[in-house]
Length: 464
Image 1 (spheres, rainbow, N blue to C red):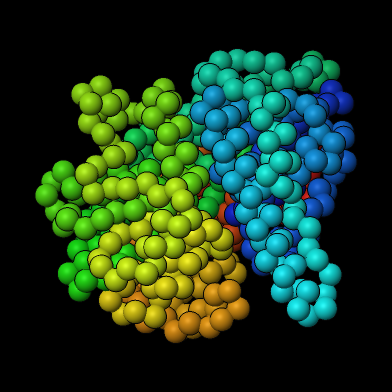
Image 2 (cartoon, rainbow, N blue to C red):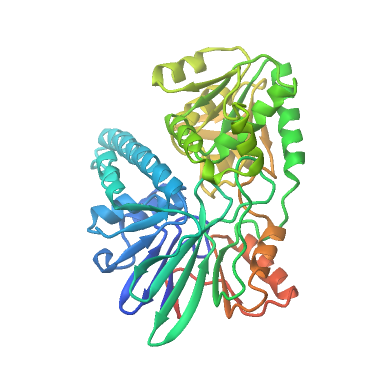
């Protein structure tokens, strides 16, 4: 038995790990690497293994850095099952089709600029049609249900509390009468967050824990503190008649923010200004949220039972058409716009930022972790000039960064998660984290008498 680290190793994006047992090869996640565009394209096009040797894929959740390279995997010859929860199957389908559309548009734009420079056209990593071919391979499975992946490998999904359908993967392996229990955390959510249930901790018979470390350097603020800060910034911006632009991941973060805005409205704190969710993907994702109440926590279920529109309120409009989106940028009245992508690298939010960034009345609110080299990171770092579509804009808008809204566990949550093994795990491997997150977490775990903690490098592997 062997475990290989082929993505999200000593970095945050591109989750991809390879388990080998009884001659079979199982891929845990197949995410897109996100970073410098040239580097990202190169890494995402070429898999570090022979695609045709993969027997099964197990998907922890639908976020693109965990699922986004599945169309490319299928395009290159994979035709086996992709196991995931039922909610993840629904979300993955719409997210990958949206990603394929974005890949096409980005390739089209790059080709246009290349042509003017006498350079060759660019092919998309995959197309929307390629993405549609993933759907027949998705096998939606209930939480807490044991199922066979391949000979000598049985799995079960446990709620990770990160986004709708997110799961930790319990993988029980047996080879030549040797047994190993591997637990892959996926992305670990936080306790007491709106909408979703709390994460399930790993079982105490886990031998190998493969877990994320994104925010291993610090505990998060209380979600209520983050909510109050968000409210304060929104009210301050609206008072000066400005727009609030929030780059927001279409799945998970957008629904949580809508929930918070709905709360502001219900409590009489939100002025009568329009609120827009401007992302076709977010609209589709919100529809899927309503369908999968098996993922809701008790409070959300009670709201739904009593008819409370937790993802709807009077001031809210879901924007679908491009024409409606463009019209928002011609208006000067105060408003709140939530739009994808969450790292401001593509999608409609880029246009909203372009039209808002040079007006000091406006606020660009960053509410999630931003990958290095993305426009979202440059804005969060408060760079004085931001390049958008090849043109440079002076950053005059207020830049607000709010910690505490993250859907990832902070250091305290991660330590608690690892403690679920009761210090019986033979190995803990930290992935999905930069050094600044993983190394402090490693030190904290060792303070808590967890001895065998490792931070594996990309394209390395270990015997289990």
